[in-house]
Image (cartoon, rainbow, N blue to C red; front, side, top):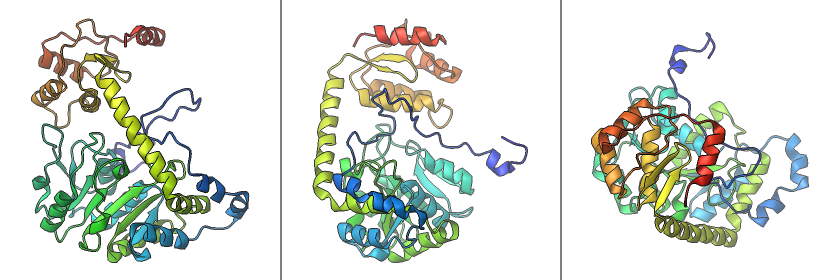
Length: 379
């Protein structure tokens, strides 16, 4: 960083986006992009004629997309605001409904940007630990009198709350905005969009990146009471009135209109997910390529959560007891003494030694040896 950067920003740890290899030689799972092409209607909508119109500014009101989205979700156009990806919708919401005296409450294991934005916007963060089984306890969010954001389904756990549990949180915080981040709701869980007309403090955010194959177009929707949406537009028109480009407006409208393609690809992903889970659980071992840890286990899902905990260097809110619990929940048979660990985190090594009683040591291998190790790893 330069010597000109403000002290406040120098203390902010930026979000690290998922790696995007440019050689396209991988089956990449790290950002949950769709394996399917965008809808044929999207391809047709982003036509040469529309490309030629890029010399013109996009519609700041996003009128056509708003009408289509409102009809799709059973709302009024005044209850919807498109964003440059759902991240922008969420950022606008934090800017509108939080400040130094209005904290943001969110889970300790959830989408990483919430904490980053708190640091960037000087918002006090009220971090609420998940339960030992990685579920979110709704009662922990009752009567907080703070702005709340809940990823539902949560990431990376994939667990979700039923709609009535969200409703209980809304009812117990009538004077605070409750943001429900539904990036993955199309793959499981109940959307809270049907509650919008009942609760003026509910803001639902969805994305086109996952279930509508438009991650590269950058489009999201915020949906809520018309007054909440007006607040978000106050932020938008103070920052970037033309936040959605012309081609994305057309692509988003077409994606919403092609419900048959949406249903078909969503069902295919859900079916593939179930098959993959079944196949992984049938295998006796799993390897994390990130840290090169080979763990013999029965639950690959819990291993993924464990890896996320380890990547956070165990210095946040994770005690040895919590790590031990997550290991036992993963039904670990044993961790090999001849395990190879590629890691920069001495804290992780020490904690694993304390938890398991197995002496762990750091071993940094040349890239060639790492590739050979992985190639020789038995499935």
